[in-house]
Amino acid sequence: MTNPMTLPYRPNVGIALFNRDGKLFIARRTDLPGDVWQCPQGGIDEDETPQVAALREMEEEIGTRNAKILAERSGWLSYDLPSDLIGKALGGRFRGQTQKWFVMGYEGQDSDIQLDLHDPAEFDAWEWVEPQELLKRNLGFKKTLYTDLIPELAALFQAAARDWVRTNRA
Image 1: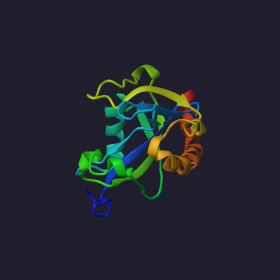
Image 2: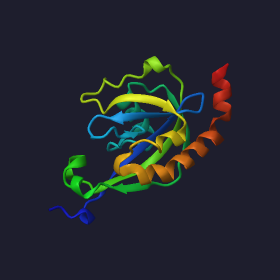
Image 3: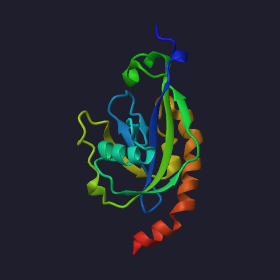
């Protein structure tokens, strides 16, 4: 059995994508049972900055890069995989992920979002919701992470988005 304490965390980005109405993009995972929802996220490739990774991952997972980075959460957040996924998920090489989170403003149309461009698709459904609504969904083993994170990301959006929302409503 793999000892999780000997495994590193995988560098990862998280994307809190907000539309002009202040609603958060959430999507339902295809690879977890029980209708598990989350924000887009993904690994950081070698020689890639977190900012570049966030835009790339957004395009891979939801089919568009049509967003502007409005804020970056200070610091990194780490989470551990559940014990039954250690040695299996994330290629079996990581105990969990350490994430740099970005708040982005969506500048596209809903019709630009395509969940089936990446094979296999990571998500099979998506919605724009009030940020606190995500916390009422099944978040799987990431519930604690999101419970701590969502209020902070919503506040970062509110602080950073005033000018962005105004300029995009014109």
